[in-house]
Length: 339
Image (cartoon, rainbow, N blue to C red; front, side, top):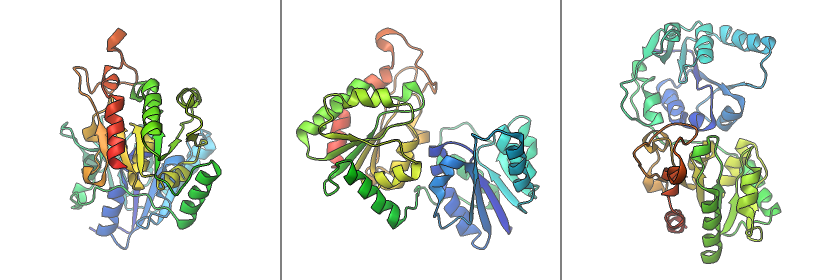
């Protein structure tokens, strides 16, 4: 099989898009002369800029919900001349956009109803597998077997230099080892206790000479203020940054401690030794990273885990038990080993 124009799409979420980068490399290796485009959420796909295996990035701005904008994007699909489209998300919108390409080969999930919009439907056997392995299932009909697993974000020298300048402007000594911490997450029960983060900072300040920076999410102002309390003299908080700027900052860090969220995947992809703190989601899916590279998931299995819910349903002392069982000593020891 040969294809002149290929569209790959993973419509949403920062971490999920980063986890498709091995797929991009595999596609390019198999189809070296094809035009490969990638469609996805504008914020997330900005992380794919300068990826040498892509010819085109098509950002979808979810903040623009006008009928005119929607029609413009569907028209772009209709007139794209694609002969292969691979939908790695398979929600109603991405299924319709895949169908709109009129590609002779359209690969997507075997989901009820919208699965009929694909020419090749990908089922799932229900076994626990990493997100990367899951995505590779969509390449199997093309004769592509899993080969690459390392995620990649390509940064320019200018972006790295600008990151160093930003850190210096915040008072960070960039000649020292830097530890970054991302204490927030989209789901409430993915957030390690704020008191634990504060205690972790106390240990790091008392027992190491590393520089410490906090990475905030868009709704983390109160959380950051709490964690910074009593630590402002030694800890610097980043402003809210575009994701590529955050990636460049994390590329300057020796260690990155993060809850299970998009920035965790960014840290791994730019080479920071990343410690992921997990609660409701299984690490087997969302932390497919090599321990030999210094990456480590921390997870405590309890009777209800992985619950895969946005809020903990347990009450009293059992509330967020899976997070409470991950101790400050355990996280600090992991940081110290990587320093």
